[in-house]
Length: 313
Image (cartoon, rainbow, N blue to C red):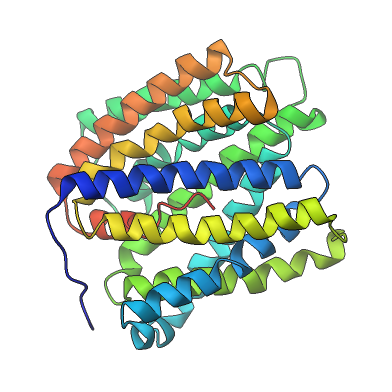
């Protein structure tokens, strides 16, 4: 298996990661605008299909076409695609119903769920430090969710409540993906994981055709195609950033997405983060940073897994 070269250039790594995070937020804004008129499953198709030419060009430029197209564990890629595609569809559905900053804040629950699932599924020992960080993050998530899931209301009967449940479900599924990829990276090249996810997501999204695909307007089609292209570029930038800096160093910069989400949400959708969102997101970020710091000490497969599970959809 061909291993890509790496260099220790933290400035370059951070710049690439921040640009990727910004582009993922731009992609999310495009999806949010389009899914007002287009079903989430159809948006998943455009996001995945139009990212593939960008990803294939990148793989070819790196000379890793064989590694990408000849997987060792095809079944593992299919499962990764199933979980990841489901998470993407739920996220896109949530984007249609909730403000962009709120979707972003709820999405920060993924590292929290990952720690919990690692203990349950992989038998990892979770000591008091990480238990405290997980608890802090869960409190933050509940603060963000509370206005949508208030006692005395049926969350699933309101659009915002349904959106919150969908995004929370997506966060849990992305945690499942991270756990799964900790095993997948032991045999699979990064190029294969990136390519086969786009391929399986494209194919799986077609299952949603009977549930109401529409002929998109010119504007919506442009937004969806643009989301695929921008998402593909962002995916490449994320992966490239890990060639110049450690995953544990770069992971905290994921939280810059809340700043970008707030700015884009305000400028494009006239959305402002609510007080519960800001307070809750702050606690989730703190818990997440503590978990990242702890995983930096543990090292191992977590860093390799992070490099191919960063994409938000």
